[in-house]
Image (cartoon, rainbow, N blue to C red):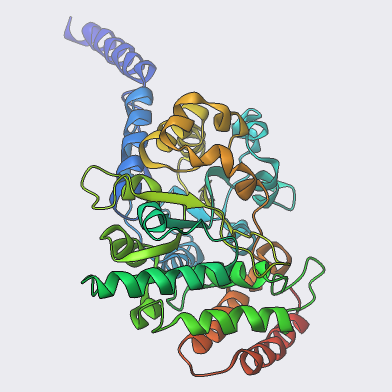
Length: 426
Protein backbone atom coordinates (compact mmCIF):
# COMPACT_ATOMS: atom_id res chain seq x y z
CA UNK A 1 0.00 0.00 0.00
CA UNK A 2 2.86 2.37 0.78
CA UNK A 3 4.43 1.76 -2.63
CA UNK A 4 1.14 2.48 -4.33
CA UNK A 5 0.85 5.72 -2.33
CA UNK A 6 4.20 7.09 -3.48
CA UNK A 7 3.02 8.02 -7.02
CA UNK A 8 0.06 9.81 -5.47
CA UNK A 9 2.38 11.82 -3.21
CA UNK A 10 4.62 12.70 -6.16
CA UNK A 11 1.60 13.76 -8.19
CA UNK A 12 0.33 15.91 -5.31
CA UNK A 13 3.74 17.53 -4.87
CA UNK A 14 3.92 18.23 -8.59
CA UNK A 15 0.44 19.78 -8.51
CA UNK A 16 1.39 22.04 -5.57
CA UNK A 17 4.65 23.09 -7.24
CA UNK A 18 2.74 23.96 -10.39
CA UNK A 19 0.25 25.98 -8.38
CA UNK A 20 3.11 27.97 -6.78
CA UNK A 21 4.72 28.65 -10.14
CA UNK A 22 1.40 29.75 -11.51
CA UNK A 23 1.02 32.24 -8.68
CA UNK A 24 4.29 33.84 -9.69
CA UNK A 25 5.78 33.39 -6.22
CA UNK A 26 7.96 30.32 -6.65
CA UNK A 27 9.41 31.75 -9.86
CA UNK A 28 10.01 35.18 -8.36
CA UNK A 29 13.50 36.57 -8.92
CA UNK A 30 15.52 39.43 -7.49
CA UNK A 31 16.39 42.27 -9.86
CA UNK A 32 19.34 44.47 -8.93
CA UNK A 33 18.85 48.02 -10.10
CA UNK A 34 20.97 51.14 -10.12
CA UNK A 35 18.59 54.07 -10.52
CA UNK A 36 19.72 56.71 -8.04
CA UNK A 37 22.68 57.65 -5.89
CA UNK A 38 21.33 59.42 -2.84
CA UNK A 39 18.59 61.49 -1.25
CA UNK A 40 15.29 62.05 -2.98
CA UNK A 41 16.46 60.53 -6.26
CA UNK A 42 17.27 57.25 -4.54
CA UNK A 43 14.07 57.24 -2.48
CA UNK A 44 11.82 57.84 -5.50
CA UNK A 45 13.61 55.05 -7.31
CA UNK A 46 13.11 52.73 -4.35
CA UNK A 47 9.39 53.52 -4.18
CA UNK A 48 8.87 52.89 -7.88
CA UNK A 49 10.87 49.68 -7.92
CA UNK A 50 9.08 48.31 -4.86
CA UNK A 51 5.68 49.12 -6.38
CA UNK A 52 6.68 47.07 -9.45
CA UNK A 53 7.93 44.25 -7.22
CA UNK A 54 4.64 44.15 -5.32
CA UNK A 55 2.71 44.08 -8.59
CA UNK A 56 4.79 41.30 -10.17
CA UNK A 57 5.72 39.18 -7.16
CA UNK A 58 9.44 39.70 -7.76
CA UNK A 59 11.88 41.52 -5.50
CA UNK A 60 14.32 44.35 -6.06
CA UNK A 61 17.69 45.27 -4.65
CA UNK A 62 18.98 48.80 -5.06
CA UNK A 63 22.68 49.03 -5.82
CA UNK A 64 24.33 52.21 -4.49
CA UNK A 65 26.56 54.04 -6.94
CA UNK A 66 28.87 57.06 -6.73
CA UNK A 67 27.15 60.44 -6.83
CA UNK A 68 29.63 61.83 -9.36
CA UNK A 69 28.68 60.87 -12.93
CA UNK A 70 32.37 60.52 -13.79
CA UNK A 71 32.99 58.08 -10.96
CA UNK A 72 29.76 56.23 -11.71
CA UNK A 73 30.78 55.67 -15.32
CA UNK A 74 34.14 54.27 -14.22
CA UNK A 75 32.35 51.91 -11.82
CA UNK A 76 29.98 50.75 -14.55
CA UNK A 77 32.82 50.18 -17.01
CA UNK A 78 34.63 48.02 -14.47
CA UNK A 79 31.55 45.83 -13.89
CA UNK A 80 30.62 45.57 -17.56
CA UNK A 81 34.14 44.82 -18.74
CA UNK A 82 34.09 41.79 -16.48
CA UNK A 83 30.59 40.84 -17.70
CA UNK A 84 29.46 40.84 -14.08
CA UNK A 85 25.77 40.04 -13.45
CA UNK A 86 25.77 42.19 -10.28
CA UNK A 87 23.44 44.82 -11.76
CA UNK A 88 20.49 43.97 -14.00
CA UNK A 89 19.22 47.50 -14.66
CA UNK A 90 21.63 50.39 -15.16
CA UNK A 91 20.94 54.13 -14.94
CA UNK A 92 22.67 55.77 -17.92
CA UNK A 93 23.55 59.41 -18.42
CA UNK A 94 22.31 60.79 -21.73
CA UNK A 95 25.91 60.90 -23.01
CA UNK A 96 26.74 57.26 -22.29
CA UNK A 97 24.83 55.20 -24.90
CA UNK A 98 27.59 55.59 -27.48
CA UNK A 99 30.20 54.55 -24.93
CA UNK A 100 28.44 51.54 -23.38
CA UNK A 101 26.00 50.32 -26.04
CA UNK A 102 27.66 46.94 -26.60
CA UNK A 103 26.88 45.89 -23.03
CA UNK A 104 23.08 46.31 -23.14
CA UNK A 105 20.19 44.38 -24.68
CA UNK A 106 17.90 45.74 -27.37
CA UNK A 107 14.71 46.77 -25.58
CA UNK A 108 12.49 46.88 -28.65
CA UNK A 109 11.30 43.27 -28.21
CA UNK A 110 10.05 44.21 -24.72
CA UNK A 111 8.78 47.76 -25.17
CA UNK A 112 5.56 47.06 -27.12
CA UNK A 113 6.03 50.43 -28.83
CA UNK A 114 6.20 52.39 -25.56
CA UNK A 115 9.15 54.37 -26.93
CA UNK A 116 6.77 56.20 -29.29
CA UNK A 117 5.31 58.05 -26.27
CA UNK A 118 8.67 59.70 -25.48
CA UNK A 119 10.51 62.63 -27.05
CA UNK A 120 11.87 61.31 -30.36
CA UNK A 121 15.24 63.07 -29.88
CA UNK A 122 15.90 61.13 -26.66
CA UNK A 123 14.84 57.83 -28.22
CA UNK A 124 17.16 58.56 -31.16
CA UNK A 125 19.95 59.32 -28.70
CA UNK A 126 19.38 55.94 -27.05
CA UNK A 127 19.29 54.03 -30.33
CA UNK A 128 22.69 52.72 -31.39
CA UNK A 129 23.13 50.70 -34.59
CA UNK A 130 19.38 50.25 -34.75
CA UNK A 131 19.09 48.88 -31.22
CA UNK A 132 17.14 50.64 -28.46
CA UNK A 133 19.64 50.19 -25.68
CA UNK A 134 17.90 52.38 -23.08
CA UNK A 135 14.49 53.84 -22.28
CA UNK A 136 14.13 57.53 -21.30
CA UNK A 137 13.68 57.94 -17.53
CA UNK A 138 13.78 61.71 -17.07
CA UNK A 139 15.16 64.60 -19.06
CA UNK A 140 17.04 67.70 -18.01
CA UNK A 141 18.38 71.01 -19.18
CA UNK A 142 20.39 73.55 -17.27
CA UNK A 143 18.32 76.35 -15.67
CA UNK A 144 18.95 79.63 -13.87
CA UNK A 145 17.59 79.75 -10.33
CA UNK A 146 17.27 83.18 -8.78
CA UNK A 147 16.13 84.81 -5.57
CA UNK A 148 12.91 86.46 -6.68
CA UNK A 149 12.61 88.40 -3.44
CA UNK A 150 16.09 89.92 -3.79
CA UNK A 151 15.58 90.98 -7.40
CA UNK A 152 12.37 92.70 -6.34
CA UNK A 153 14.07 94.30 -3.33
CA UNK A 154 16.71 95.92 -5.51
CA UNK A 155 14.44 96.72 -8.45
CA UNK A 156 16.09 94.33 -10.89
CA UNK A 157 14.55 92.09 -13.55
CA UNK A 158 15.46 88.51 -14.41
CA UNK A 159 18.77 88.78 -16.33
CA UNK A 160 18.60 88.24 -20.08
CA UNK A 161 22.37 88.04 -20.67
CA UNK A 162 25.31 86.68 -18.69
CA UNK A 163 26.57 90.26 -18.41
CA UNK A 164 23.22 91.27 -16.87
CA UNK A 165 23.47 88.38 -14.44
CA UNK A 166 27.04 89.35 -13.49
CA UNK A 167 26.08 92.96 -12.81
CA UNK A 168 22.98 92.03 -10.82
CA UNK A 169 24.98 89.52 -8.78
CA UNK A 170 27.63 92.14 -7.95
CA UNK A 171 25.05 94.73 -6.90
CA UNK A 172 22.99 92.46 -4.68
CA UNK A 173 26.00 90.69 -3.19
CA UNK A 174 27.59 94.00 -2.17
CA UNK A 175 24.37 95.41 -0.74
CA UNK A 176 23.53 92.26 1.23
CA UNK A 177 27.03 92.05 2.67
CA UNK A 178 26.89 95.68 3.66
CA UNK A 179 23.61 94.90 5.43
CA UNK A 180 25.34 92.18 7.45
CA UNK A 181 24.94 89.03 5.32
CA UNK A 182 28.69 88.31 5.10
CA UNK A 183 28.27 84.90 3.46
CA UNK A 184 26.22 86.13 0.50
CA UNK A 185 27.56 85.30 -2.98
CA UNK A 186 26.24 86.36 -6.34
CA UNK A 187 26.40 83.10 -8.29
CA UNK A 188 27.09 79.40 -7.71
CA UNK A 189 27.40 76.65 -10.29
CA UNK A 190 29.09 73.30 -10.94
CA UNK A 191 32.80 74.16 -11.21
CA UNK A 192 34.42 70.89 -10.15
CA UNK A 193 36.61 69.15 -12.75
CA UNK A 194 34.04 66.57 -13.84
CA UNK A 195 31.21 66.05 -16.34
CA UNK A 196 29.10 68.71 -14.67
CA UNK A 197 31.65 71.35 -15.65
CA UNK A 198 31.46 70.18 -19.26
CA UNK A 199 27.71 70.85 -19.13
CA UNK A 200 28.11 74.28 -17.52
CA UNK A 201 30.93 75.41 -19.80
CA UNK A 202 29.22 74.19 -22.96
CA UNK A 203 26.23 76.33 -21.98
CA UNK A 204 28.48 79.38 -21.68
CA UNK A 205 30.26 78.67 -24.96
CA UNK A 206 27.17 77.84 -27.00
CA UNK A 207 25.26 80.83 -25.62
CA UNK A 208 28.00 83.06 -27.04
CA UNK A 209 27.82 81.29 -30.42
CA UNK A 210 31.02 79.35 -29.81
CA UNK A 211 29.70 75.96 -30.94
CA UNK A 212 29.61 72.53 -29.33
CA UNK A 213 33.31 71.56 -29.00
CA UNK A 214 33.01 69.05 -31.86
CA UNK A 215 30.40 69.67 -34.56
CA UNK A 216 27.94 67.17 -36.04
CA UNK A 217 30.43 66.26 -38.80
CA UNK A 218 33.16 65.46 -36.31
CA UNK A 219 35.18 68.65 -36.78
CA UNK A 220 36.85 70.15 -33.70
CA UNK A 221 35.58 73.73 -33.45
CA UNK A 222 36.28 74.81 -29.88
CA UNK A 223 39.11 77.30 -30.53
CA UNK A 224 37.22 80.45 -31.55
CA UNK A 225 36.80 84.02 -30.24
CA UNK A 226 33.24 83.44 -29.01
CA UNK A 227 34.30 80.49 -26.85
CA UNK A 228 37.22 82.49 -25.50
CA UNK A 229 34.91 85.40 -24.59
CA UNK A 230 32.56 83.03 -22.73
CA UNK A 231 35.39 81.53 -20.67
CA UNK A 232 36.91 84.96 -20.00
CA UNK A 233 33.65 86.09 -18.43
CA UNK A 234 33.34 82.89 -16.39
CA UNK A 235 36.94 83.29 -15.19
CA UNK A 236 36.07 86.76 -13.88
CA UNK A 237 33.38 85.33 -11.58
CA UNK A 238 35.79 83.40 -9.37
CA UNK A 239 36.44 85.16 -6.04
CA UNK A 240 34.30 88.05 -7.29
CA UNK A 241 30.67 86.88 -7.45
CA UNK A 242 31.44 83.17 -6.96
CA UNK A 243 33.44 81.70 -4.06
CA UNK A 244 36.77 80.09 -4.88
CA UNK A 245 35.28 76.91 -3.46
CA UNK A 246 32.97 76.72 -6.49
CA UNK A 247 35.94 75.10 -8.25
CA UNK A 248 35.04 71.99 -6.24
CA UNK A 249 31.22 72.27 -6.40
CA UNK A 250 28.98 69.66 -7.96
CA UNK A 251 25.20 70.01 -8.11
CA UNK A 252 24.61 69.39 -4.43
CA UNK A 253 27.28 71.75 -3.13
CA UNK A 254 25.85 74.55 -5.28
CA UNK A 255 22.32 73.76 -4.13
CA UNK A 256 23.43 73.71 -0.51
CA UNK A 257 24.76 77.27 -0.71
CA UNK A 258 21.77 78.60 -2.64
CA UNK A 259 19.17 76.83 -0.51
CA UNK A 260 20.82 78.12 2.67
CA UNK A 261 20.09 81.62 1.38
CA UNK A 262 23.73 82.42 0.64
CA UNK A 263 23.57 82.99 -3.14
CA UNK A 264 21.53 85.20 -5.45
CA UNK A 265 21.77 83.04 -8.58
CA UNK A 266 22.43 79.36 -9.20
CA UNK A 267 22.84 77.21 -12.26
CA UNK A 268 21.37 73.73 -11.68
CA UNK A 269 19.09 71.05 -13.08
CA UNK A 270 15.29 71.00 -12.56
CA UNK A 271 15.45 68.56 -9.63
CA UNK A 272 16.56 71.44 -7.39
CA UNK A 273 13.13 73.11 -7.69
CA UNK A 274 11.35 70.68 -5.37
CA UNK A 275 14.16 70.79 -2.83
CA UNK A 276 14.55 74.58 -2.71
CA UNK A 277 10.80 74.80 -2.15
CA UNK A 278 10.64 71.99 0.40
CA UNK A 279 9.05 72.48 3.79
CA UNK A 280 12.41 72.91 5.56
CA UNK A 281 14.01 75.15 2.90
CA UNK A 282 15.06 78.63 4.14
CA UNK A 283 14.29 80.04 0.66
CA UNK A 284 10.93 78.37 0.18
CA UNK A 285 8.61 80.63 -1.82
CA UNK A 286 11.45 83.04 -2.68
CA UNK A 287 12.86 81.22 -5.72
CA UNK A 288 12.27 81.77 -9.42
CA UNK A 289 13.46 79.74 -12.40
CA UNK A 290 14.32 81.00 -15.88
CA UNK A 291 16.19 79.99 -19.00
CA UNK A 292 19.94 80.46 -18.70
CA UNK A 293 21.11 83.87 -19.94
CA UNK A 294 22.24 84.68 -23.47
CA UNK A 295 25.86 85.33 -24.32
CA UNK A 296 25.55 89.02 -25.11
CA UNK A 297 22.90 90.76 -27.18
CA UNK A 298 23.58 88.52 -30.20
CA UNK A 299 23.75 85.31 -28.21
CA UNK A 300 21.06 82.79 -27.36
CA UNK A 301 19.53 81.12 -24.34
CA UNK A 302 21.16 77.72 -24.04
CA UNK A 303 20.67 74.83 -21.65
CA UNK A 304 22.65 71.64 -22.07
CA UNK A 305 20.60 68.51 -22.62
CA UNK A 306 20.81 66.24 -19.64
CA UNK A 307 18.79 63.38 -18.33
CA UNK A 308 19.01 59.72 -17.47
CA UNK A 309 17.87 56.48 -19.02
CA UNK A 310 17.41 52.87 -17.95
CA UNK A 311 19.10 49.95 -19.67
CA UNK A 312 19.23 46.18 -19.17
CA UNK A 313 22.60 44.50 -18.95
CA UNK A 314 23.48 41.80 -21.48
CA UNK A 315 24.90 39.88 -18.53
CA UNK A 316 21.66 39.87 -16.54
CA UNK A 317 20.40 36.40 -15.65
CA UNK A 318 16.81 37.62 -16.09
CA UNK A 319 16.74 40.15 -18.97
CA UNK A 320 13.03 39.79 -19.67
CA UNK A 321 12.03 40.49 -16.07
CA UNK A 322 14.56 43.31 -15.83
CA UNK A 323 13.03 44.83 -18.97
CA UNK A 324 9.61 44.65 -17.32
CA UNK A 325 10.97 46.78 -14.47
CA UNK A 326 12.43 49.28 -16.95
CA UNK A 327 9.11 49.66 -18.76
CA UNK A 328 7.31 50.22 -15.47
CA UNK A 329 9.73 52.86 -14.21
CA UNK A 330 9.75 54.73 -17.52
CA UNK A 331 5.97 54.52 -18.02
CA UNK A 332 3.57 57.43 -17.88
CA UNK A 333 2.19 56.85 -14.36
CA UNK A 334 5.61 56.57 -12.76
CA UNK A 335 7.00 59.55 -14.68
CA UNK A 336 4.02 61.63 -13.54
CA UNK A 337 4.55 60.63 -9.91
CA UNK A 338 8.25 61.50 -10.08
CA UNK A 339 7.50 64.85 -11.71
CA UNK A 340 5.00 65.83 -9.01
CA UNK A 341 6.97 64.60 -6.01
CA UNK A 342 10.53 65.27 -7.12
CA UNK A 343 10.41 67.71 -10.08
CA UNK A 344 12.04 65.14 -12.38
CA UNK A 345 11.19 66.23 -15.92
CA UNK A 346 9.09 63.71 -17.86
CA UNK A 347 10.30 62.44 -21.20
CA UNK A 348 6.74 62.27 -22.55
CA UNK A 349 5.28 65.37 -24.27
CA UNK A 350 1.77 64.55 -23.03
CA UNK A 351 2.80 65.04 -19.40
CA UNK A 352 3.76 68.67 -20.11
CA UNK A 353 0.02 69.31 -20.56
CA UNK A 354 -0.95 67.46 -17.38
CA UNK A 355 -2.60 69.80 -14.85
CA UNK A 356 -1.18 67.99 -11.81
CA UNK A 357 2.36 68.07 -13.19
CA UNK A 358 2.13 71.78 -14.07
CA UNK A 359 0.71 72.65 -10.65
CA UNK A 360 3.74 71.07 -9.00
CA UNK A 361 6.22 72.48 -11.54
CA UNK A 362 4.81 75.74 -12.97
CA UNK A 363 8.02 76.51 -14.85
CA UNK A 364 7.64 73.46 -17.10
CA UNK A 365 5.10 75.11 -19.39
CA UNK A 366 6.99 78.37 -19.93
CA UNK A 367 10.35 76.62 -20.30
CA UNK A 368 9.13 73.74 -22.46
CA UNK A 369 11.29 74.87 -25.40
CA UNK A 370 14.34 74.94 -23.12
CA UNK A 371 14.01 71.20 -22.72
CA UNK A 372 13.03 70.36 -26.29
CA UNK A 373 15.73 72.58 -27.87
CA UNK A 374 18.55 71.92 -25.40
CA UNK A 375 22.03 71.71 -26.86
CA UNK A 376 23.54 68.22 -26.84
CA UNK A 377 27.05 67.39 -25.81
CA UNK A 378 29.01 65.83 -28.71
CA UNK A 379 28.60 62.27 -27.45
CA UNK A 380 26.94 60.73 -30.51
CA UNK A 381 29.54 61.97 -33.00
CA UNK A 382 32.52 61.08 -30.79
CA UNK A 383 31.09 57.74 -29.63
CA UNK A 384 33.43 55.73 -27.42
CA UNK A 385 35.87 58.63 -27.41
CA UNK A 386 33.42 61.02 -25.79
CA UNK A 387 34.70 60.45 -22.27
CA UNK A 388 38.19 61.54 -23.36
CA UNK A 389 36.77 64.56 -25.21
CA UNK A 390 34.80 65.65 -22.17
CA UNK A 391 37.74 65.09 -19.83
CA UNK A 392 40.00 67.23 -22.00
CA UNK A 393 37.35 69.98 -22.18
CA UNK A 394 36.53 70.17 -18.49
CA UNK A 395 40.22 69.97 -17.57
CA UNK A 396 41.02 72.92 -19.83
CA UNK A 397 38.06 74.96 -18.54
CA UNK A 398 38.93 74.20 -14.92
CA UNK A 399 42.44 75.50 -15.53
CA UNK A 400 41.00 78.74 -16.91
CA UNK A 401 38.63 79.18 -13.96
CA UNK A 402 41.48 78.53 -11.52
CA UNK A 403 43.59 81.22 -13.19
CA UNK A 404 46.21 78.74 -14.39
CA UNK A 405 45.71 79.56 -18.08
CA UNK A 406 44.12 82.22 -20.24
CA UNK A 407 41.14 81.18 -22.40
CA UNK A 408 42.90 81.64 -25.78
CA UNK A 409 45.90 79.59 -24.68
CA UNK A 410 43.74 76.83 -23.15
CA UNK A 411 41.41 76.55 -26.15
CA UNK A 412 44.26 76.45 -28.66
CA UNK A 413 45.94 73.64 -26.74
CA UNK A 414 42.61 71.84 -26.32
CA UNK A 415 41.86 71.96 -30.03
CA UNK A 416 45.24 70.43 -30.88
CA UNK A 417 44.68 67.63 -28.37
CA UNK A 418 41.17 66.89 -29.66
CA UNK A 419 42.30 66.84 -33.28
CA UNK A 420 44.96 64.27 -32.39
CA UNK A 421 42.30 62.23 -30.62
CA UNK A 422 39.94 62.55 -33.59
CA UNK A 423 42.55 61.27 -36.04
CA UNK A 424 42.26 57.88 -34.35
CA UNK A 425 38.62 57.90 -35.36
CA UNK A 426 35.51 58.98 -33.53
